[in-house]
Amino acid sequence: MHPEGFDLLHGDVSMLSHRNDAPAISIGSGRPDLDMVRGNFRVDDVVETRLPLDCFVQVDGCIRLWNAKRPDVVATLVLEERALQSILTFRCTDPAFNRLWIDMQCATSEAFWGGGEQMSYLRLNGRRFPFWTSEPGVGRDKSTALTQTMDADGLAGGDYWTTNYPQPTWVSSARYAVHLETAAYSVLDLTDAGRVGVECWSANVDLELFDAPSLPALVTKMSDRFGRQPALPDWAISGAIVGLKDGVDTFDRFEKIAASGAAITGLWCEDWIGIRQTSFGKRLFWDWKWNAARYPDLPAQISALAERGIRFLGYVNPYLAVDGSLYQEARAVNFLALRQDSDEPYAVDFGEFDAGVVDFTNPAAAAWFADRIIGQKMLDFGLSGWMADFGEYLPTDVRLFDGSDPMEAHNRWPVLWAKVNADAIASRGKTHDATFFMRAGFSGEQAHCPLLWAGDQCVDFTPDRRIDAPLD
Image (cartoon, rainbow, N blue to C red):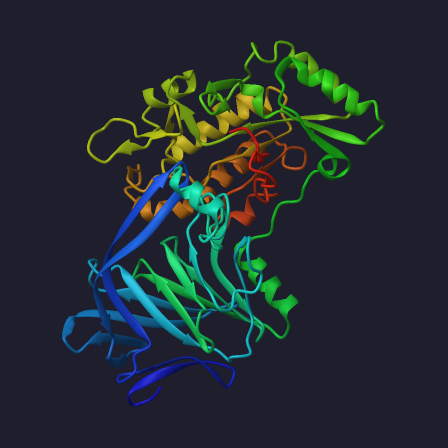
């Protein structure tokens, strides 16, 4: 402590120095300004108030901070030591204040890594990294013609920081790590050497601090904190998993591949649930059950594959097409997220078809999806694995069962979705036999999800560009 402020130290080095005449912490209020088109987001902030906290007092182990012009709005700061980490708990007495800014310090020589699955840069220094799960975009440089073209077509152009799997956690070469325990939109700003800027769209945040004598030991601590990925079953890493999606022609193609003598342990058919023809190509039919018209002999074919030690894999996501039977089931029992202005289910436009959002904040809805869809329609049918897609798509204007803010539920959604899949596998006693993989993620998902899809692959060699990506 200092008569005019306080310091947060890592060893003998200051990580945060707050003084009345140079506040490191500010609170404020703002409102988001954003658009979403099929999982692509434009995110801006309208900051209405920002108050540097230039007054403080320590009372019974709690630091109270406020702005001299607004003494009625108080932020509290409490430091708690735990076995794995230290936790700085920030809270604000006024719920209208929903922004927090923190300026931390670092050595100019420090390197930082992390931020989840960052697809452009391993070393984070010199840039800002927002943490918001979304489509990564086609193109990752706003100055290129490709990215600009895709932005004009449904906000589909990416940026260097857009990712399916962000995480507000960063690791320092000085052998410490910082994690923001919040699902709110947040930003790590490393554009200035010697400064670690943190912005969060919530004034109620836990800042978790980890340190260790070595980087491997630090990673171990963080793995203890967030959970370790479940092990893959032996079959998933013993041979090739062939991805085909040609309906009745799939198995003829598969046999030609198998005849080559390759070690094959799986056949992945995303289109096992049928397809929907749109003006821009084939899409999957989002009613998660076997489509006999596209795969008339599938039960027998799955059994025949199993006798050869080959597993069958499919596809699922947490949305239900409004023209499918499972949507009607979910609607009848009120398991769908609702519109803000009525008790009607929220319909998401996925491009020439609409789908409802199964509301995983409702435990009964999550259990229904795990048992009725993944359990009965997939595992009991004979699937041993699948892609669990679209965790990054939750709209920010839905009304949820638990009353939570969809702006915060958006980042939590892939974690809830991962747990639904893991619970379904556990319910059938197949923890070491069945598996799934995901694209989207956020803090804590690693405890449920064994494998991540590392991004759709795009090839841009000629004006007649070919884009190879899964059907969805």
